[in-house]
Image (cartoon, rainbow, N blue to C red; front, side, top):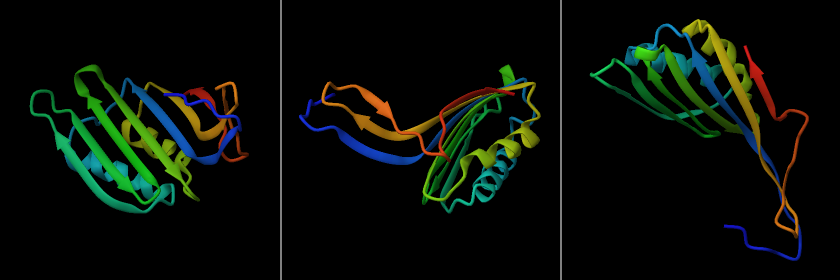
Length: 145
């Protein structure tokens, strides 16, 4: 819902949100393997782990997992039957979520990865238009590896 205001609303960049689609991937089953990968991602990014939860699916061996961070979260869903995984990495503060990407590549050895990076926060003008704020560390990108 947009509530118009006479003054522009400003939220400085709060964090970086990376969405990763992982194609032609290996190692998509096994709770411990997936949890280890996510923990290594958090450590690589200099993030603080608060809680982890990994849930296996018996029907296909896939896994859904979430790590709650002091800086936000890392989540994953794997579909081994399609050799595909989807990850969501959102971090604020001094954490560097882009440092998760080499960890993901090493664990899953994907044929392709599509990486979308969003800067969270921006300005809403008096006309209700959103203008993202880009910080030198937090650039919006689309990358295909």
